[in-house]
Image (tube, rainbow, N blue to C red; front, side):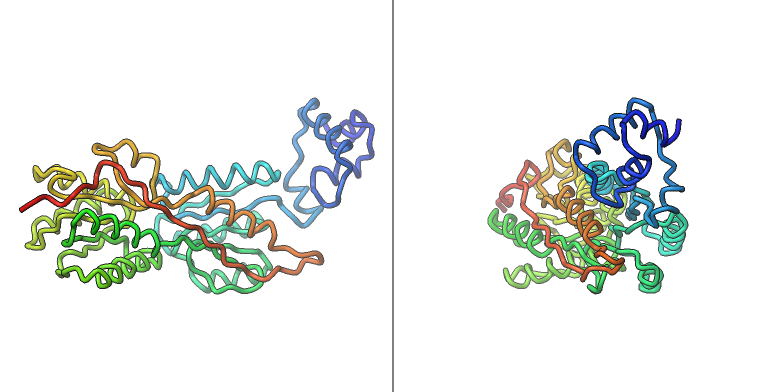
Length: 336
């Protein structure tokens, strides 16, 4: 089946079919409807490679994430793909596994496939790789950190506000000895959350202890190991705030291993509000970082990045607000 058959069934020219498929020019809505009905009826699948050669556009966006095993990212991918489908765009997904060398391979794949733009939802991006995209006039949007420039935008999650809400919740329950398990501190997002914790601890004039802050890896095993280090120290926290929900779930496992109760002995609060957090035992209090809003902002940044004539629009910073979700894992400090 070819484009001529589609044009014949829709009673339009092959040029109109091409414009409808490629989105290179406006087509009357009724005409577009007839063309798409003909495409569906004839089971016609356009050659995307030929389409890219003809239009200079691939209708393909790249989406680079850090860890496909962390439920935060599949939820983000789903939201991004849902929007892409509505705009007749495809998505090429790459997973870095927090590895800078693997990031370079991901970038190579994106360039080989001639993507129209890339959403980089990870912290491992090398500035030299950013320049590679820029030289090719490929729009980018980053999660959390980016130097804005034409074609380069950023989606910033309000980590500070989320950490502040979590800390205020814990202190309102009487907690003063609060531990914090960070993510890998080579990542900017992990540093942001740690700095927000230290700021809130200082503002509330809470006691500090060198063992109350431990570095994790944003995974369950890292949360468990970090929590065990805290429990084996003389820090004696009554609550722990984790840099993400997987870390918090690992911490909960360590607390149970030591025969302690949650929240009776130690309250636990996470960050992200992944779906799993509502099904732990006890259910996990956490900070909601809305993936759908992040995906919407990232996709629309790429969609709006190209101006007529091939120029790139000025970069923009989009802010995504967080909110506290209180469940069963936090409660009043245990009387002494």
